[in-house]
Amino acid sequence: MRALVDHQKGSVVTEDWIAVATTKDLTRRRKLRVEVDGAAIALFHAGGQVYAFDDVCIHQDRSLFKGTLWQGKVICPGHQWQFDLATGYEEDQDRCQPTYEVRVEDNTVYVNPRASRVAATTSTEEAHS
Image (cartoon, rainbow, N blue to C red; front, top):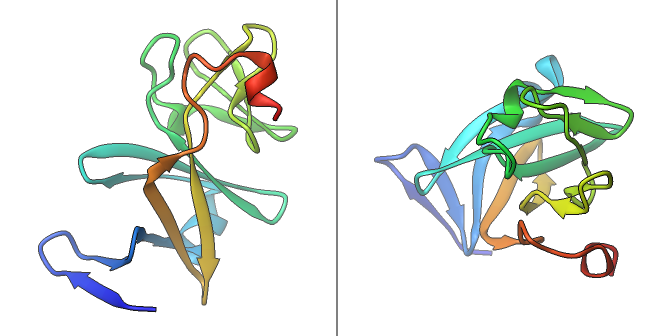
């Protein structure tokens, strides 16, 4: 695997994956807001997994990083929409928050910012496939 260091941004770039945090950073508070290529990404640590969401809620442009983690969901501080951590799906509204692929290697959290897993207007059938 080829890694490049972007000295201006202080991040390590590995092909399409970008190092954004350490597991120590996340374990302490269970959530963290990072910026990658000008996009705000909210990281969440729950159930031994790390999840990455577009930080801006699709509903009212609130920061999901400021939300609450509860029973496998992040609750938006705006109108309490509850997004599933694994899929980004909001059951009551039948909408999805964009999420990103995450991998953890040697206590470093990597995000692939070019690989949004779900579009904001995805239907129920697409969100669960």
